Structure formats: C-alpha cells, structure tokens
Length: 239
Image 1 (cartoon, one colour):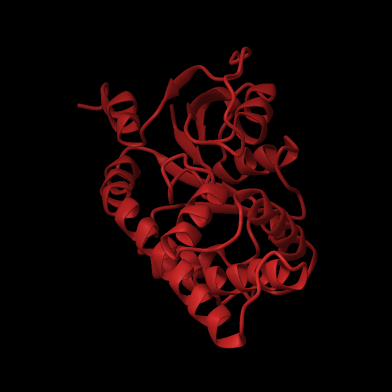
Image 2 (cartoon, helix red, strand yellow):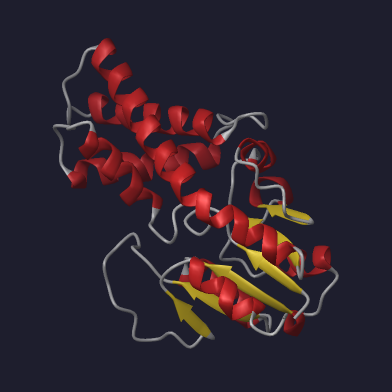
C-alpha cells in the first residue's frame, strides 16, 4: 500500500456523522422552534444553492463557510414561514449554530490530527472531496496540512459519485488502484466509485442522511465505526 485517499466532509471532520445531523444538533442546541423535516428542506436547499452559486470564496475557512451555510438555511426557514423571527433573532441563531458546529469539528479533529500525522509518515495522503473551492483554506485553519495532493470537486469539475474524481486522485498520487486504500463515510459516493476502479476500501460507517441498514456492502473491504480504528488497521505492519 502506497497511498491513502481520504474523503473530508463527514469523514475527517465529524467521524461519520452526516452534516445534516450535526447542523440539526446545533439548531436543537439553540432551541430552534421548527421541525426536523422543515430543517431538512432548508438543508437540501442550502446545499444545492452552495453548489450552484459562487457564495463561498477560496479564502473562506470552515467557520466562515458555516456562517454562510446556516444563514441560507435560516433565510429559507423564515421565507417559507417555518419560523417567525426578527433580524436580531436570526443573527443569534446563525451565530449560535455556527459556534456549536465549529466546536464539534474542533473536538473531533483533536483526535484525527495526530492520526493523520502518523499515517503521513508511512503513506502518501491524498484528499478527495466534494467541496466549494476553499478546502485549502479549511485545511490551513484547522492545521491539517498532511496531504501531498488535493482533488476538490469545485476545482477539477467532477463530483462524487463519478469515479472520474477518484481516477484523477490516482493520477495525482502516481499510484495504481491496487496500491491505494480509499476511506470515506459515504457508501454511494466513496466506496462504490473507488471499488469500481479497483481500489481497496474502508467504509467509515456512521450516522447517515437516513437511518437504514444496507443489505449490500460488497464495495467496502472493511467497515469501521470510529475513525480511531483506522490507524491500527493501516499501521499494524509498519512497525
């Protein structure tokens, strides 16, 4: 094994908790007076808008991204009468949710960061992510500069689950598929396209967008439920 291809969102930052659930926890923390179903509408709208419009700037770190993302969701909830709120109440909600989510990420990365550092001493680490064009700023702000190559959807023009984004990552790593392992939290977006190219795969299985038990897990060579389990799997033969 020569390289590890990591997903970012939901894998490194939340330990396989889908971002919709992290954000909803943030809204609940702020005692939001609307339902989870209404929030999910706002979340889907926000993700589509962020993917289609140049709202996120390359210099935006993740906290800046959170503020923009949550504002889009809150504006949607108010516009569609799921929440009656003043401008001041909206601002308090946006700040509180962003603060909560950023703290969750910081706490998770405190254990992820040293693992990445140790893995980087034995493998090429490559990041393969559906992101908004600002992943370099995010990694810099969170002190996650362990990756030799970064393949970001907004930059390369290909998004998961298209296998081509993983083909580009293999090219960037200068490795054959059988020489890499792909690690991600999404079975559909990470495991299936990576396995279709012949990569080894580790599925970080957690709290997804919907709660369901997959019957077909054949695209995942190994399934783990906590990021910390990955280190022993990949360093067991490294001495």
